[in-house]
Image (cartoon, rainbow, N blue to C red; front, side):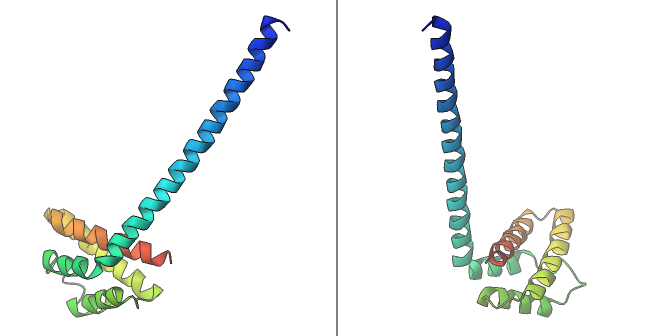
Length: 127
């Protein structure tokens, strides 16, 4: 064999190793992201009551267009895990409106609480 043929074989082997490494890296990343998603979901589900209570404290009277009793009823259903798809959509709309108002007013803690609740609704909707 000539030196050129050995070089070609070496290039093919090196390329194959690189492709295997990329596949392994991508697979590893996917598994890590999946584990992080499950960990975040577990954390939010475990602390749902505290999250809702904190939200109620930080976002008092952001919106006057939605009665707080309606919002609280939906939040109670979220906490109990009995929120229907229609109710989840309704609660998301309320929260998005409140998030916009909280951003407008510069209420950072309310924005964080609302964002966490929106994330919780999205994660629970995946089930």
